[in-house]
Amino acid sequence: MTGEGAEPGTTRPGGRTARVRAAVLQATGDALVEKGFAALDLADIARRADVGKTTLYRRWGTTAALVADLLVDMAEQSLPRADTGTLLGDLQANALLVRRTLTDPRQGELFKAMITAATCDERTAAALHRFYEIRIAEWAPCVEQAVERGEVPEGTDAHEVIRAVSAPLYYRLLASGDPLDEAAAHRAAEAATAAARAGVYAGEAGRVV
Amino acid sequence: MTGEGAEPGTTRPGGRTARVRAAVLQATGDALVEKGFAALDLADIARRADVGKTTLYRRWGTTAALVADLLVDMAEQSLPRADTGTLLGDLQANALLVRRTLTDPRQGELFKAMITAATCDERTAAALHRFYEIRIAEWAPCVEQAVERGEVPEGTDAHEVIRAVSAPLYYRLLASGDPLDEAAAHRAAEAATAAARAGVYAGEAGRVV
Image 1 (spheres, rainbow over the protein chains, first blue to last red):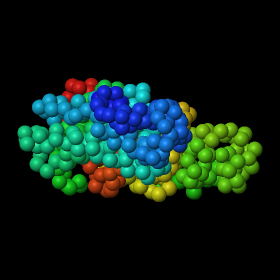
Image 2: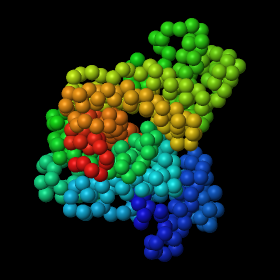
Image 3: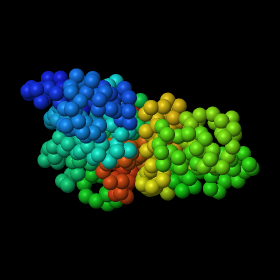
Image 4: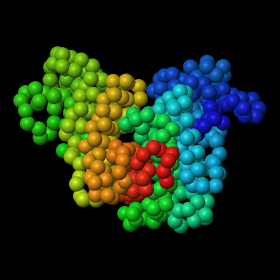
């Protein structure tokens, strides 16, 4: 478990079925990084994973299903939320984790490939959105605890705060191209914390600040 | 001029050269939206634009050069910044403009196609980053004026504040899939304003809040 979307299949237990899945998902990730979604090919992935083609066709059927399962696996394998005792500390841990994931040579390319695939494939888009839902739900209790501690107002939308931490880092990766350095991660966490404290994520938008 | 990246070639003056460029860039955008970057083809674009293939080859040479020129044109044609008298007002105008652009059926698909192309083509990535640089520089004076008015601290990084407005909207479009509604735009502006007021974008990250 090394990041927001950890490398699949390295340490997990399980029998032959789990081992096959791990090998296939690892091969799917490799192929995505090397060739992109459009060029994915079940026979090639079977070869890379050293698994029978029939198994792949029977169990997954399409490359979109493979990518969807890879995203399920990345969500399952990714790191649990932080619990540092302060909202800023927790959000900084989250921002640094997202930054580490997006700047990791393999993981960064994997996310770019999956986001690109999601722009043209509905099933991959649904799987990608589900991945973020799971990760956002994992980190939401950091905000809920901050509400309990009185750090941020009652009614703060925890999911919005967690999204706000990731957003500037994804914007740099995909749109503006500005550096994804640690300062950017710290700023993302600080901005989300400041906005949450000011009540931006509590109540209806357009009513606060 | 209808948005952050306006439709090229509708109202501008100019001679034959300008008309040819307008027709070619319109055709490039149409082809990008319909088929994506990988399937772009100079001969097809020449046909759509009703322009000689030789002109296209001589003047642009590659599809990457065409997309780069489309991005230059979108930056040139896009709307000037707002000047409402308050930072929140200006950032809300910006957020609503970005939202309108990304949710416009043609423009939204165009941005997705160009962002996707940028993940696998260096020249398109450079052109895309330049587009954002120009748009961010256009809106930065809103923050500089807010510093002069004493709304936000001295030393506030105007470009970071403008990036912070767009980021949550792009994150929804490309990653999480959450709705790009007006409430999301208002929140993006409010969050950037609150964080700027708190000093998050002034001085070094990791030192404030």
